[in-house]
Amino acid sequence: MRAFLAAFAAVALVGCQTVPPDTSKQQISALVQDWAAGMSAHDVDRVVAFYDPDAVLWGTRSPTIRATPDKVREYFGILKRVPPDYKAVIGEQHIRIYGDTAVDSGTYTFSQTDNGKPLVRPARFSMVLRYHDGRWHIVDHHSSAVPAA
Image 1 (tube, helix red, strand yellow):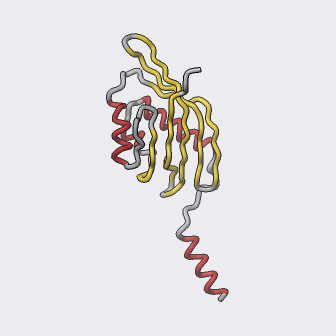
Image 2 (cartoon, rainbow, N blue to C red; image 1 turned 90 degrees about the vertical axis):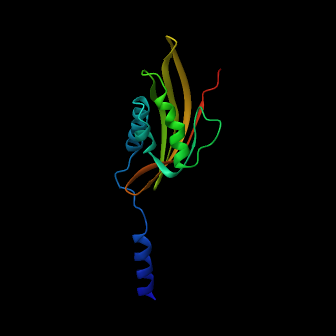
Image 3 (cartoon, rainbow, N blue to C red; image 1 turned 180 degrees about the vertical axis):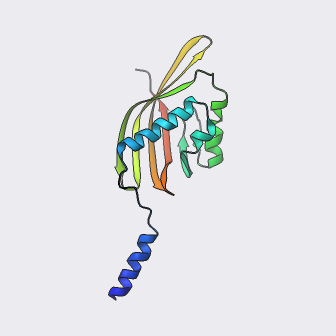
C-alpha cells in the first residue's frame, strides 16, 4: 500500500506546474509594465502574446467580452489605428500571488493627441495571471474607464 501511495504521489507531482521559487510581486509588476510598453509601441503581437489561449478580456472600449484568441487579437487591432503618440502608462498596482495564480488590480492611463489637443483617459484594471508552460499568462483582464467625479 505504501508503495502504491508513493507511486501515485510521484505521478501526481510530475503533472503539476511549479512556480519558480523566486516569483515576486516585482516580476508580476514588470510583466504588466511590459504589457503597457507593447501598447505604447502599438505592437499587437507583443500585447497578445501576454494572453493565455483561454483568456477572457473585457476591454475599456469594448461593448462585448472577448473570450477567444481571435477576439482578443481583434480588440487589440485598435493599436494599428491609434495616433503615433498614443501611450499606456501603469499607475498604482496591488499585486497578490497565490501559488500559480496572481491578481493585479490597479490603474493605467491612455493618452494621445486628438485634433491637436491632449486626450487623457484614466482607467482601472484587474488582471488575473496564471503560471504555466514556464511563464505567466494573463487569463482574465477587465478594464473600465474611471468615472467622472
